[in-house]
Image (cartoon, helix red, strand yellow):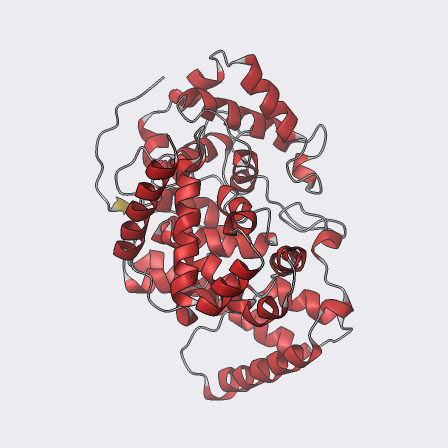
Length: 420
């Protein structure tokens, strides 16, 4: 099944009466399918559905010196905010900081007060933006807001506009239902069913007999039918699962279409070749990453060559799953916010940031196994999303789209010469 889509304007107008506090912006006749999976947290699970114990950090894993430095930095901002009252946004990873404080048995009432004030300020800035602008259009202020993170309560409404999926959802209301009613190859269906059981088993939304499994199955089946050239590929299940935490089922389907193989002209995410039979796009971008490491971190490049470390062993899963299986959920969402707005150059920035942040430990590693273990552990414990984003945007230098495009063309030539 293939639809010819008409070009739409880059500027997507919001309804003037749009309420970003509402969970039912995109309503339909089926109220059950209109619900996203994210909910209120409890003692066992966070509000994304993940087990809290899976996200916890042991006391031994915490750099106490770094924590003290963080405390002093927060204290300075706290007094600046309370007494000088400067009009400036400070964004702190709330979930992360609370978790570290609990783990270290540290309770700071004044810091909690400060953080609550920051939350109110941060949410007000988002609400104020859409009260004044009422549209999703590229501008410096929106870019700045998104890089600081989209509040959870707004993601279900902002993501579809950033991806352009709301246009397709509105324009083609029967496509998703037709895909669900179409026959799918038994081999593909079997692979989907197998991968569903491996999709975030520690998330209550995707455990056996959970409502999320049915939605996940429907979205993956519909995508395989709608995009027969791509079909279904392992790792799509994780991307779909995260998307369903915030979006209703049909809107999640269109968002994955836009994310993986855009049908809407304004998107700048080029990853459809990651999931084809030869995975040419993935191989191309691995070559690009290796070249960028060589340019920006020559010492890391030489050290990895010394131990015959293939960049694909480190980065393939990151790119295929868009980091969602490597990072804690809060960090993944920060990356996705920027990816949906700025395009696939964010993938390269995040990868380079990880190499930059692990530079010292990486140089000290003296075996292939220790290098691979370093990256596995550093991503799993990457709860300081602010630090990651600061490194990605401020410390790795310029990374223009023209440069990436040029490197991709060069990588395509290399692949053509090496593959018959």
